[in-house]
Length: 288
Ligand code: GDP
Image 1 (cartoon, rainbow, N blue to C red):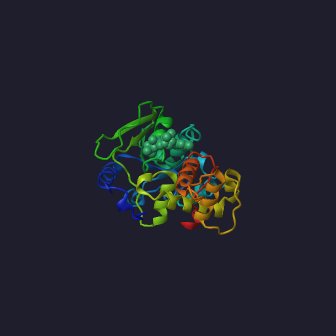
Image 2 (cartoon, rainbow, N blue to C red; image 1 turned 90 degrees about the vertical axis):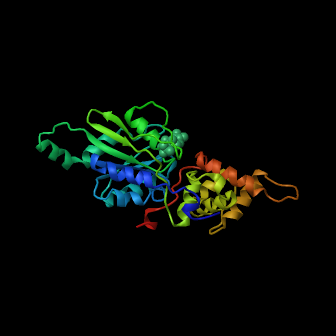
Image 3 (cartoon, rainbow, N blue to C red; image 1 turned 60 degrees about the horizontal axis):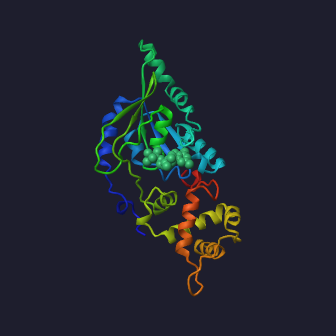
């Protein structure tokens, strides 16, 4: 597995970068959608630098797939950085109703200063950013009641910027171009692989699944025991857990060896489908 982001992503940051810079003057706040399971790994660190000084709302999305205790910790962490935070399950619509009041609270002073200038009911504009697969389109559709299919998001397919009304005094800027994840730390790439944010075909699935097993074995051993009926020893290597689970499932090849490749795909599929439970794969302390 290659572990640097340049080999995984085309690195076309130029377009979003230019757009973010060009539009920043037209928005009152920036809303960054993150995957609650990997809030730090699903950020593009350039966004901080590009949007410095703008009020920031963090949307921790996919909370239905994350560990609720950890989501609380992450929310507290981002609040401690001065961001407003909401927790959502955009798929079911959970938490999205908090969005407009969170924006208005965040922009309280700005609204007051608009009103002092006689601009009562001035439309607030929010730029929405997120790496692929965090649920940005789903979130925007739920918040705005937009029904249109997801806009074309493939590299090379141009689409214009879109203002999406939420209500009479709130509009979203849906950003064209793809905001790729960016990282130097290979662990970040691995976490993006766990959630499916990086395509499986560029990764070694057995390696990836072994790493997921190791993490789950260390942090959520009971979930592995329950799902795969295996005992988990402290510090047990991931590949060993993968083999144990494969053996339990009866994935044997001729000669009696466990088909760990098959087990690897099953583990990743079941994890992503939420069949093992709700897990958070990185903790704020690691990033503090
Ligand atoms: P985008 O690439 O960021 O625009 O992601 P999409 O909005 O297209 O979402 C990608 C997939 O994740 C879709 O299948 C959505 O239904 C799903 N999804 C989005 N938000 C959530 C969420 O909060 N929870 C769960 N379980 N799935 C979600």
